[in-house]
Length: 217
Figure 1 (cartoon, rainbow, N blue to C red):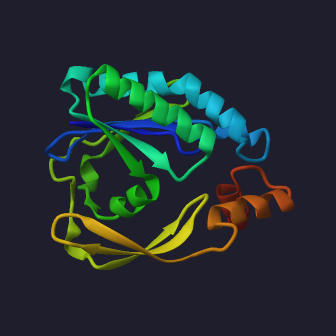
Figure 2 (cartoon, one colour):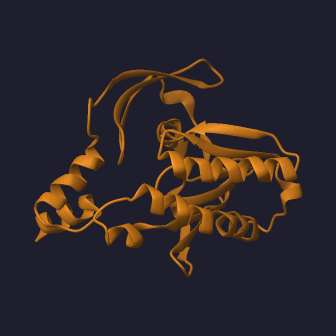
């Protein structure tokens, strides 16, 4: 049983996965409405909000999965890349939680998480989601077949996110995937380009959905 903690940018999240590959909890607290006032993510505000949210998000994940810390075998946490202040909040919380519960701590590159998500096989009819107060959303996917399938490797993976646009070659050694960076943007990633373009033409943050909505109309 592993609990994962994510605070790399502007969302505080915690998920729990059991040894059968079932997602027992997926709790996210979004800061989108907060940063929309400023037209983009303000790192200092993001890190302070993580401080406010991280404990509640983790405890909500445990409650949702009906688990105690004694049931957890390891604590995983995003240790990069991301906003320095935001990462520090998650890493420090995870260090404290792992030490207090005497569990091993696993650092995770969140870009590897993006790539690995493409190898997860989920029966779509088993996934349900509900909304909770205070910008916290809960997703519960009790699917025993939610396992990583490495049969599709080698694979050329395209990561297109807010802060990174990269081509990564993923190859299986029979047990794990190994990654090799093939190419990346020299300056802005796709998400940053959308936000800057939206701001330049007077559209709100986040830029991607705003530009899409404008295009649809």
